[in-house]
Length: 257
Image 1 (tube, rainbow, N blue to C red):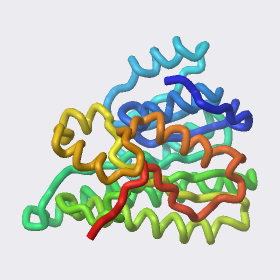
Image 2 (cartoon, one colour; image 1 turned 90 degrees about the vertical axis):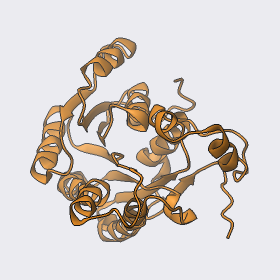
Image 3 (tube, one colour; image 1 turned 180 degrees about the vertical axis):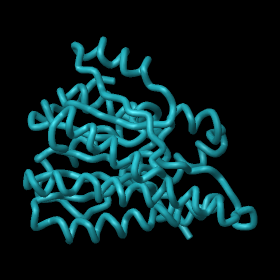
């Protein structure tokens, strides 16, 4: 993955990413490392091999992996404290981790409801809450919340996920208003269908992909790199007057009734 732009203010910057060891999250970790940032990330699966690879590829700039269940608020906050202690005050918080498990309305029980909202919404709020005091102290910071175009399209098959996506957008706009006076920016990024390995393994079929691409203005399938560039822009001071927005990166999907 080769960088397409250099954001000089990200060199040496302290960055924290949820789910930074796989899928789009791993691409984000690498993208920030390419800029010279100091990256800390959390995930459920062991990422030692990934961190070894990144250190080898980027001159010993090894990302700091912390195992964490992001639905455990105390543990989540502790990892943010650890990241700050290790790399300094956060310049950017990227709430990337999510679970888009397919489900029907009928099969949802209270336990599944709680699980899905804990992962896809609660963890976002409490990560922001934990990061904000340090950002306020330094008088700067960028929070980037991952949502999705799924709720904009009214997609069926995962209503709790789309509900959380919509909530993330509301959270983003409200936080942007509340913390703007401290020069902290809060934005959302809404990817389209990005062909990560998980998507290919679980849901991509030739017909489904062809149908989706036919709704895009641009003919190419989205890759993680397309999302990385947008996140780097939002994290950088290049976007210093951009806040409270949802940046849609979907190839120009046309929503039809």
